[in-house]
Amino acid sequence: MPQYRNLDITPAERVKRYKRFYGGLVFDKLYSLGIRETSLSQEFRPLRQDMVLAGHALTVKIHSHAESEEVLSERGNKPWGGGPKQKLVMEAVTPGCVICIDTGPSFVCAQWGEMSSHLAQSQGAAGALIAGNVRDTRIILQMEDFPVYTMGYAANARTGWIVNEINTPIYLPGHPKHSVKIFPDDFIFGDTDGVQVIPAEVIDEVMLRCEELLDRENDERKKIKAGMSIDDVYSEYGAL
Image 1: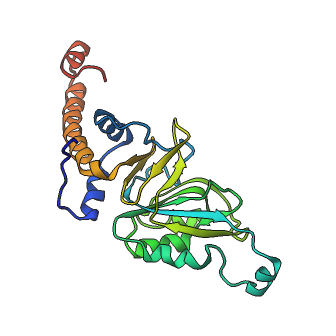
Image 2 (image 1 turned 120 degrees about the horizontal axis):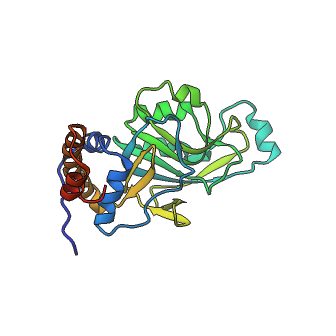
């Protein structure tokens, strides 16, 4: 069994260090450890291109929920969606987590919005990853440092959904494989190039390897900008 490095640091410190990275860097270091097929579908998109998503996974499984006309009539204009376990999602938030929602995926309505974003952020969440729809996007974009990645958008939230499970393994659409299993406390990293899942046992090992390569690549960039020849670049650094 390989021995991976683990650091005694806070979730906030880990998130901060990961946010220096970019998708290709993380992918290469996962690949160097023999970890394959942990990239999520390219259908996941950030609400804004400069958003970087990083944090340990708080996994949530939800499902579409068609309520009876009697229930809908009785509730009227009161809040809807999520069922009795929705509050438990927010109570499960810990500092530095990314709320990862497996919707099925279902695109019949929006399963996340700006009030959920504000409440999650107030409890320490570092962002959200939704395999479904988000609404209130313009308001979420006004928030400071709360990245949200989604597969779609919808104003409608009344069609109905219900929280089934919290902090259990989930599946999210993958690339190139059909799906990727995410366990609670795996680490999520996303930027413009896509979203990746980092298994819990290698989170710090990948981070440290990324930092080592980042220093090397910064040195390479300086030399290239200073006029390093093509032959010298490939001789010293190999394939780019």
